[in-house]
Length: 496
Image (cartoon, rainbow, N blue to C red; front, side, top):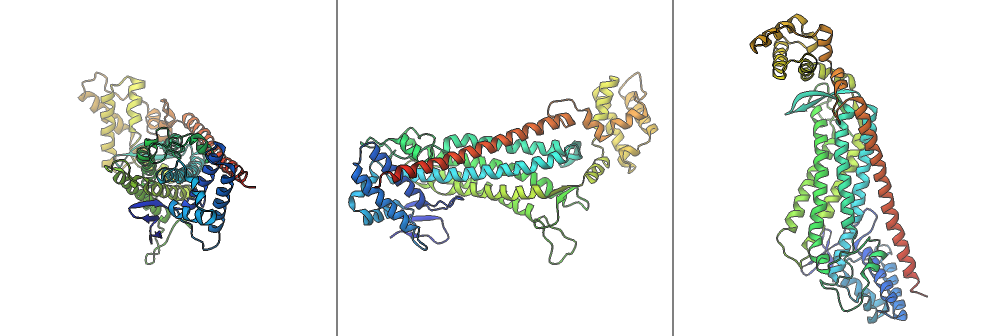
């Protein structure tokens, strides 16, 4: 008798491992074996492979086994050989004709996809929640100035809407990858047999339709022995990509907690924790847990590659739970990240102060000199760099630099560059404006920049695509629900 392995999500029968994971919809391997038996019974009778009276006996046995397993504490075996013995006990040896043209190979491959498609939709749903929360935060603080960094050093000011929009775009790309993968996940291997179909005229498209698949994996050998390998790796890659984007966002926010006055934090509450020893601590517990999940996704994705690598065809390793567990971890990451995004609080004044305390606007000063006074770029850039050295050397903020000092530094720079005109070609008001973070952001002209109109456009388009993705998700789930209802109706018709 097959025994469940303690602490594992597999049934073991000799060297064969079959997943018994429970999906978020509450479906276990036994459920899907039952659904495949229903679909096979319907198709076999419809195509005349099994006569209607025997089809009735098969349907009654399938129903009896499913009902018995629904009792509290009843076994729900995920291995078809165990289920078949229960079918025989319920309806006699003839009911094994339900397995005509099938193999455990195509059943395991089909079960693998049934689990994966449920979990993929859960990941997509969780990602939609992250995008909704992040979009609301970006809209609320669209034009607030924040520092941006390159090489871990403050580089240029941007707006919070522009910054968050970058992550929204990354998460949208992963949603797009999931939609594209869905077209490959939701294809049926059932009826492929062990690898070359059978002499029974099995209607594979009908089986696919009854189980809510949108088509079949065409080549029967591919269906069982090639496609499962690259499918799992594809989904693991999508999960890894999502974890990397989430990890980058989490890293930025967690870095704030090293400052005595961070400008973006979690609101104190359920998602933060305190120290047992240090009363001042407000630990970003949810962010740390999310970062751990992101690392877990990456580790599990590598496991998918290792399991799928160099095993040859005809084996079952790549139809195990590795890709499923990776997607599950991603779904948990999405759920926690969505909660964290809803709890983030921006201190806009503190963020602006951080920008104004440093010299990240000197890029615009050099650009203004080139654009408005025809000063060669390298001259303007060198002047701005010398201005930074002067200001930092005196402990000054950009706004505190005396205009006369700026004129003197420019004259020295211009003469050293061999320019005839060595006077700073900007008045004090324009000089001060060029060093303003808000003015620098407003002056941006390129597509995709931080200027308010452009950020508003991008966020609006990101919102439209997020709403379209929610509609796509709803349509996919309705289609699966309706297919299940049609299968049940067709199955019931087999019985008196």
